Length: 387
Picture (cartoon, rainbow, N blue to C red):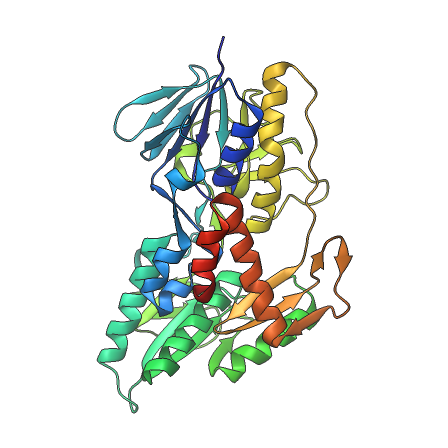
């Protein structure tokens, strides 16, 4: 009997896993479900904030990723019934499965801060990046040198820093009257990262005239200002929140063990239901003391293994365990970039933290390699100047 395998999500985890499943399962009936008909190179989506034309270079059509034999359904997942083994879609149709891979990504976490969900923009998809661009552009139109537009980015992790950098480049290119504020509740940007990396990134941010406010959490957001635990309120024209991740609402009633709608799995990606696997931001994957991070890098690595594990489960073979291998951090600040702890070909770079042209090229290479892996080198070359 042909096994019906369903994959949910077209992010890094879903796109990578589809190709692994197709390679492992010649005789399976594979269905891929996503609410978009493209894969977004999400870690480059901040580029769209500066220039919306970049969207055509970082959206990869589904038909260029999957094989013709894989069925694609464009719809939004409303829920999962593990008892009946069905995926419930918003259009009212259900899809039956024998084995399910959940790779739905995440939503922005607002941590119960009053007014945050109602008043903040987020950066979880292409439409979000386009909306931020439009609002920044509109705010700049009505501003002046004596009364500049105030753009506030909440959360100084990778997304927040890269968004601030793109807004700075937009400001400089268009000579727009804009003040940029990067706000972080913890006492330093990029919380938990190496101090050398934090210091180098901070230097680049300050050189781009980005104001950094740390060590004071946001307690409320209105449609005009954000309020802090200790400091004075900060008025804004555009407020972007990048402060955290939580699982999709579709996972809330799925009868799978989860934390804040992020499904918990073993190191082999198997959930509390042996026929359901999960990877990417929607999953909390056991890695001993700490789970795998919700990053593109972790999703890429997991996707290489999960396809084989689903095939092994179908065949009744033992599953492989996966261990996240941190290959370092590369972050862009506008046209600049900083790299830290980078490993390539099994070797560490001789300098632990570096910037300038080598880091900028490395950032481009990483994105281009992913595009080439899931589509073609021709498409990667076309995207190069936008990365």
